[in-house]
Image (cartoon, rainbow, N blue to C red; front, side):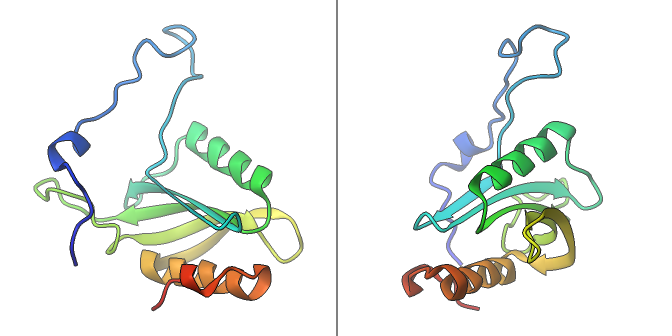
Amino acid sequence: MKSRIRNRAEQAKPIDFAGLYRDDNSPVGLTDGDAMLELDDKVFAMFEFKKAGAGLTVGQRLLGERIVRRWGEGAYFAKVEHTTKKDESYISGYEAKVTEVYTQVDSGEFKWVKIGGLSMRAFLVYITEKAEKEQNLPKKYVFQS
């Protein structure tokens, strides 16, 4: 499959947020989201990629949970694990696994749900098919397995 990274050298540069905190001792500051998907104002998904076994930071967890609760139905914050080795040049989103998701469950509550390593592709198929059935997401946005 063809990569859509346009400028790999630029993409590989980390963004340093030094100087953008309230002060040098503040835990409050900027963060990034590794990937986001929005479809027709019906689906929003935010993905945070972590090395297998690593956890989300407190800030990442709070940000993802708050965005999902504000969006409401059709929103997901997914922790995605990868097993990329140091000598590999990139992390493959295709090979990464969604291990847990914060979303609104059937009871209407927002909860973390462990899903045990669903492929990213299978997760995208699931959330878009669900939105097609429950929220009238146009078929053109539904991922195919």
